[in-house]
Structure formats: C-alpha cells, structure tokens
Length: 126
Image 1 (cartoon, rainbow, N blue to C red):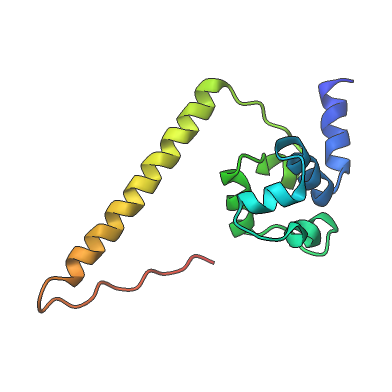
Image 2: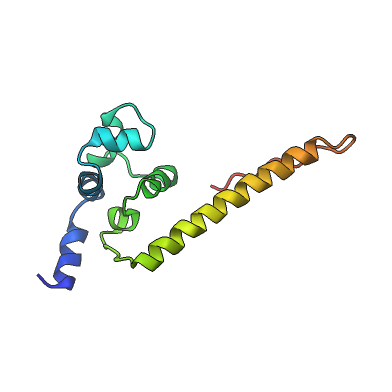
C-alpha cells in the first residue's frame, strides 16, 4: 500500500476508531490506558470511541503524556519521529515542568513578603 493510500485510509477512520487503535497498540486494553491517565474505569474512553464526545485539550494532553499519537488520533496522519526528536521532546517537557515548578515557588515567596499584595490570579486560556 502506498503512503498516500495509507494516509487516505487513516483519514476515513473516525477519531474514536483511531483512539481505540492507539490505545490497543500502546496498552492492549482500555482499562490499562484508563489507569495510565488516572481513571479507575475502562468506560472513561467510551464516549470518545463511540463518537458521542470529541477529545478536548485536557484529554489530548493526557493522551500525549501517556505516549499516544494525538496528531494521528485527531487528524489521521501518523507522524514518524526520530529518536533525536523524541529525546528533544522529552527534554522540552522536563524543562517546562521545571519552569512551572519554579514559577509556583516564586509565587509562594511573593505571598510571604509582608505588606505585599497577592500576585494577580492566573488567567485561564479558553
């Protein structure tokens, strides 16, 4: 099968079908995948697999965090990553987590300064 043909076939699949395929590839069962993202129930994925709901940004992040190919699930295109790209991606994620931790620590330090007002609340992106 040609690469173009494979891409077209993948795009014909629904998001739910691709999600189920990725879960099966990586975890074997819905239960194991649900546990990996912190859910107790294998039915967690059912609305997404059946097409009742579409994965939102929070679920997409969780799927990426457990190693599923979110680009493929959402768009039907499998991306091939080199080992170097995967290592770079992991390094960026570690750096972002470290930066988030440092920001939280600085916010705590600011709250401890007498007479200083609390830092403004974070705006939530929609």
